[in-house]
Image (cartoon, rainbow, N blue to C red; front, side):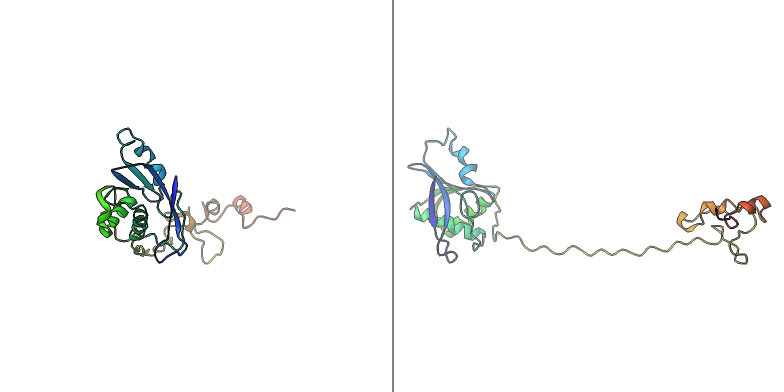
Length: 219
């Protein structure tokens, strides 16, 4: 594998190393650009070794900045046009013209941008799954999600006719007769244990003696 050092224009004075795999010789010259985060030197190696292509022309596989075996550069913007300019620098350094430029996914968008910037470098353009309107490599900002409001729940209260209640004139005692069936939520009704002592009124002596209100503490 050969390495070409190319200074990123107006970005990094020392330059960043681009990994370039140069295979074969003579014409035609095919240049391969991989997708986002892909190592072209690995992804296209099987393609260049195909019997229909191996030994026929020259194959140049380029890893983009920040991908594969190429350097990462925090000062690099990683836009499609910037990636295209770095590839242009490699082709100029290798003195190549009218190459067959092959790009997949992000590499296809970079290939389109390269062909628009330097049509003299591209003889044939082959792209697979590119963004045909490359523009910027950065996605547009997303709008915030809509605000959801919840309507308040109406308060549910048990009416005096839906649950049995203590007699207000006699605290702690139940009204005469068995308790009415509770139709409100259980949390709003009196506990079932209290209702066990309200089957009759007034209570019998045995019932009054066993009522929780008259229970004596154990010693």
